[in-house]
Each structure stands twice: as structure tokens, then as C-alpha cells.
Length: 124
Image (cartoon, rainbow, N blue to C red):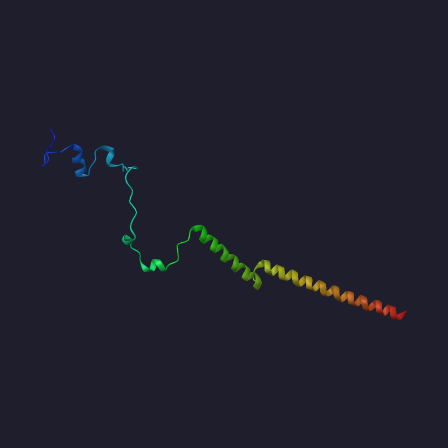
């Protein structure tokens, strides 16, 4: 026999919803209706916006942050490179000093040869 409510229109499904307990596995599974209406657009006056949020920079995406970090790292590297603090810059400076030394030796040798030729001409 079904139990009767005070208003006289009671059914088993209404009683289950009122108590909050469902029979069997139905109580364990959360069911969401894909056809349920979604929340409508909110009005601007309903939004809670702080003045601090307006002053902050807009949040960047991960790719944008990585790109900015990459540019900063590259600028830092080139600044150190120009100061001669990177390994590549040190190798370049060593190579440059070696080349300068070779050119100075070659210029000195050619000057000596030129003087020797002039001395040979004057001796004849």
C-alpha cells in the first residue's frame, strides 16, 4: 500500500527525491543532462569587478609568456656576448688577437723585406 502525503498526491518517485536517497546504483552515479539549459549571459552590472583587476596587465597565454621569456634570454645573452663574458665571445676574442698578431708579424716581415730590397738596390 502506498503511503499518503498530507496533500494526498504522493508517488514513490517524489518520495525518493524528497529524502535524497536513490535506490541501487542510481545514488552513486551523477547524471547530467546535456540538453539542460545553460546559464544565460550575465549583465555588466551583475559582474563584480575590482579596480585592481582593471589596472593589471591582461593575462598572457603560455605561448606568449614563453616567447617573451625567450626574447629576454636572447637579449641577455647578446648583452653578455658583447661584454665578452660568453664562451663564444671569449673564443672570438682569442681568435681576433691571434689574427691581429699574425697580421702585425706579416706587416713587420714585409717592411723588413722592403728595407732589404732598398738596401740591395743601394749597394749595387
